[in-house]
Image (cartoon, rainbow, N blue to C red):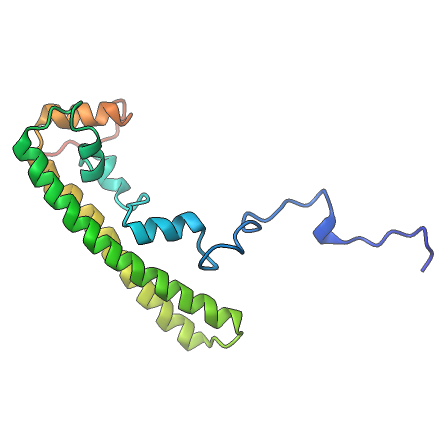
Length: 174
């Protein structure tokens, strides 16, 4: 090869886009971002209850954060705190199980020891856990909505930036 001939190296080419995963190899679980792992372990909703939220079923964490703006009564706050605590406990338990299962799948990929059957079984187990986690978060929204007045729900939607959402389906809370 002539010394003046450049050999193309795609991984160094400035014209190629960087993979969105390029910064993720250091995540605690390969295949999940560090934020996703943290959200799962901390029991955060991370968008799992978005359909409730966007249809005027407030979330317990956000309602508690907005307790003053929503003028929650002590009785409302107590009930919502209980729902939140139960949701949090269940979500953290499921989140830990999801992280462990995701880590197991990542490890069998890393060792090149995964079979199609094993992949299918493990992904089905993870999907079941994610479904349960989503139900836990949605259930909490469902449980606290009847505790709030229509005025509080409208104010919540306004404070969260949903007040102009004309596509919401009206529903009865009480």
